Length: 417
Picture (tube, rainbow, N blue to C red):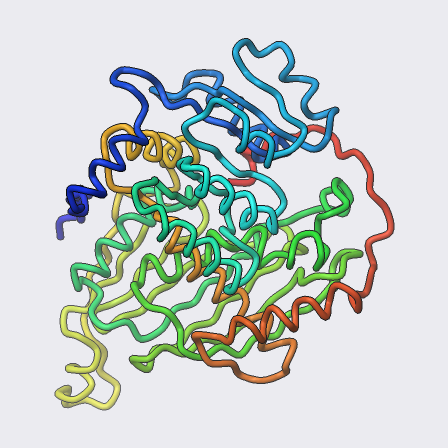
């Protein structure tokens, strides 16, 4: 069976007024996009390095902001780069066309709104906001400025196997989806990781744990690949089970979908060596993507429901084809998303990850936490105001297990992708 091929989506149509406004926000012909980076911790610093090395074309770093003066120190010798102690100052004063926000999570909303209101294109790290209500506030700011490019750093959408899975599902090769299982327990983090910043792994500073920091990628892919959002979630989140933190570091969740499909999502930052296995079962077979292997497709010759109704033998099973698709974990990742963002600004290229879509992964994470907070099944869409209220309760009543903040040793961010 031939493998699926990537198709370029047509650019969305725009009214003459919006098209003119978009053109006004694009840099002059042949000029690069002047980018400001807000937050140069682990991820922001990683972005700054590959941009300076020229791994994304037609963009220059024009400004950098960070509240920590020690983090700004290394950028003092970068020619043509303005430095700011505050992201809001960069947005208000820097000579930039666009900003990349890579700060602690709550600031994604406030800085994102400020950037859009100033007329700057926006690329925001995941999650786009901590909770549904903040996502809606940020999205509303973009709706007021639709001429601006607004993208999210969902770099795992660029991985070859994930693209192939989405294409196979969308083309109907898998048939109607019946079950989704994802065990993603290879997000291992040490105590020193959590001690590397006072905001990390706190309700007030980060808004959650593994679901808000590591798993936005997986939760985004869960709905992006399948094209489905769950309508009910029952989750069991364990808070500070494997580390001295107040937020969740181990989660097991059961999901139900409008078409009757079910799913199980299991994750933790406290398990090594860990597993990363995604299995999607449909009427026509199953997709399996695990570890560093190529994507596998076990295809039923006859759809399972049809075979079940028509087979003469009680123990008969459909014949299958074992298809190995040459699609693995390779892909342009963060650099690919950033290049796509630049191309969207300069050429109107369709975005790989529209930031508005980021509310979906946030809502699934919120639903898992809310289910645990309330000790019951919750229905999606969730009540954003209720979740915000429950979250704020944890600001004061958190276990406050985090006892120290230390300087973590330098390590490569690339090993975590």
